[in-house]
Length: 100
Image (cartoon, rainbow, N blue to C red; front, side, top):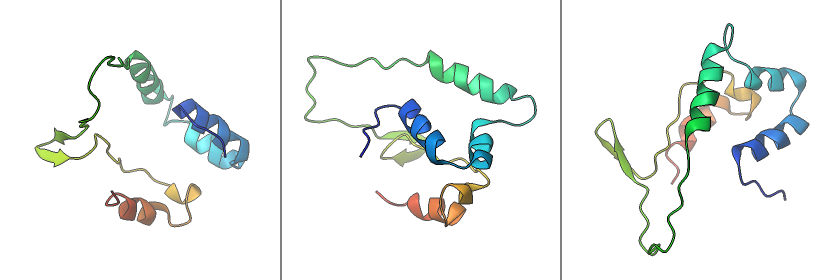
């Protein structure tokens, strides 16, 4: 099994196995793709600053978003055509959102 350590690793692997129509859909954006480029640029600006010499016995990644406590800062945005990635499509995503 491949070891993935970054989003780019997942993308490279997926591009090797997905049909062309699916690759094209996932790799593109609407219209002139301004939002797609803005999102890519925004993510490039984030830096992960590792903490060294820090007690890691009690790590907590939970936070509050829109007034609701969540165990992990991860959200699911409405996205069409999920059936290209999983047979159950949007239903699988809805079911998976409650899995801890």
